[in-house]
Image (cartoon, rainbow, N blue to C red; front, side):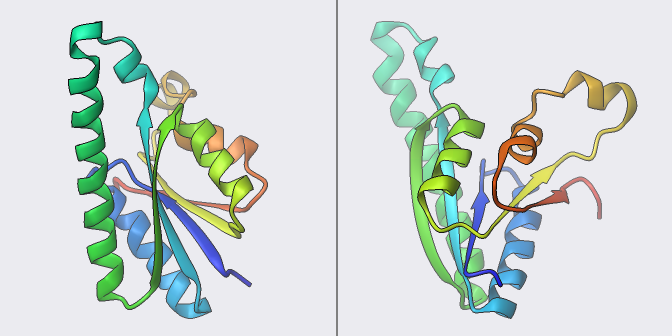
Length: 145
């Protein structure tokens, strides 16, 4: 049922829960996990001309570490892995990647906010992906233990 699973990562500690869920689904379905890191272009566009290249290099390095951490975790589970680092608006890049590749499911985390906190974060990457993705999206509460 699932041959290609996309797991976007931002390198945060909570992302490991999403990676673990994606890994379990991949093992059970003999699927490939696509690990995606998106360099948020808004972060380097705001930088001065003098600092822009340094900011981009720093963000690329951060992305490489995030991808390496995810790959190490997935390799331990013996699943096939594809990695990609893109520049763009995170939710748009995630949706674009899912449309361009044969993605059957997206697995990503959320902080599980409710009430006022949920209203304050309506612009979250996860929520925008959930609302706009063609593939099913498994949302993992990364705050729960």
